Length: 303
Ligand code: 13P
Ligand code: SF4
Image 1 (cartoon, rainbow, N blue to C red):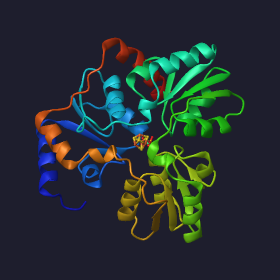
Image 2: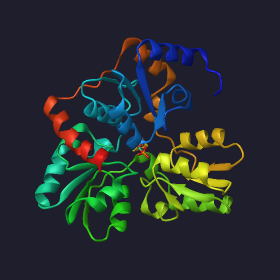
Image 3: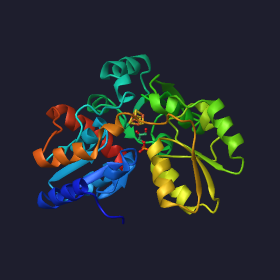
Image 4: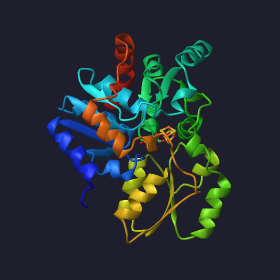
């Protein structure tokens, strides 16, 4: 591993002194990823939070990721480096929306993407991530599924599970939604030999070109293992940066020029340092919300 700068060393010192576990999502800046104990997709983050023995967990990601860690490890202190790093897609669905959909479609089960608030998880039947959505939808014991909030992930799963009827909410990730079919076609024309990997939060007319459709971790895993040496990445720019650094012998290209999640970029090294130093910002959730949301997350982690 490369040498650490002064602030990174301070973070590592504080991490050791406080026996903290730092979990980072792949979209936060690389210099933050480099000081984490693990860099994960949302599913692995939830699993690692469950297994962690440390009393202090720092989630370098957006708010719903911190909430999920707290829900799964309620007796631990869970910190978020940036208080205003939220996920706009998670904010596109409310518990009232879920209750209305339930009333409209009695008999359907509610599957909520992990990119949702604790309050939404509390009124859902089961949670899922981009890497577990398909498996969970197939296994779910019902004929109809209400899927919130991501219309694109929901459409992707619905097309693969034709035996069930899906009712989709209309949320979306503003970052992934920005990429158009024209962007993909232009990138494919520029790099005709490249294999295209894409996150299912992209629009259907983008995802349809994917040679591999998967979560952040699945895209990374594919890029590392494939014999192809030209890979076109259809997800957030930090994945492109990470792969370029990790696989210098391969040609890694991004699709479009503005594939950046501004909220993940709020989790800076400075914010992480202050978070560890001052033990802020603590994730706190109402007792009953936490208990009900836990049932949805437990079903995801154990399924
Ligand atoms: P992953 O589940 O692939 O980590 O994605 C989380 C996310 O927020 C993608 O926008
Ligand atoms: Fe939310 Fe999109 Fe950012 Fe992921 S990339 S955290 S879905 S806004």
